[in-house]
Image (cartoon, rainbow, N blue to C red):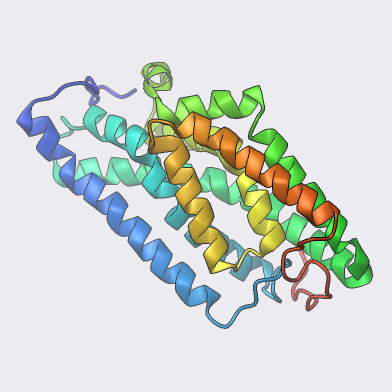
Amino acid sequence: MSGEATSPVEGSPRLRAATVVPVGGIAALAVAAWIVTIQLTRGMGVGPGTMSMSFALFMGMWVAMMAGMMLPSQAPMAMLWTRAIARTSSVVRRTTRTFSFLAGYVVAWALYGLLAFAAVVALNRVITDHPSWGRWLATAIFAIAGLYQLTPLKDVCLRTCRSPIGMFLKYGSYRGTAVDFRVGLHHGLYCVGCCWALMVVLIGVGVMNLVAMVVLAAVILAEKLWRHGEAGARLVGGAFLILAFLCAIGVWVPAGLSAPMPAPMGGM
């Protein structure tokens, strides 16, 4: 970490005040991302697939959606990092470093977005060619998400997101002008490891499904910030497995997974 960093547990009024602008910026960015996401979802369906979006439009929507859904849950690490750079000489410099950290975090989710685009294109084609497969695709999607919620890897990633002090100490060895970006990218990859399966559910029920976005954002926020978040993650896993069972027996299938969707424009 650069020489401008300081202890994350420093509690002086000056250090607390120094975090206000960066943290306020994070909150404003999350609100702006939700506004953009809501605008993009207007008039869109709730089925799977890219909803005829080009690759560029999909990625723009994905980045805005991830910023809105994920940034609020980054409060623990964001507070640690803004405290660590609180002795930086100016508000502008502190804010710049904070947003460099956030840029690295968003890039981690943008990389996952490349896989998500491939997945939704493939899902679109399968549903178009084989509408009757929708029930089993839904079963597989919820089963994968539910089982992952119960795995040790999920536990490790979630614990890191919930209490990042251990990783923060590791970041103390980072050097270079891009240290903030690298920290954000590294932490973002842990977040992807924690939440990728939840995003698979969103891919299944429709990446433009605003209700699903809000519900999953609330789940992610609770998992990372609620004191019973780890137990909550297991309950969510159990709920997904129940939904997988309901899909398997034909009681319920998400809208769009049993009917052809419009072919995407622009391909991959």
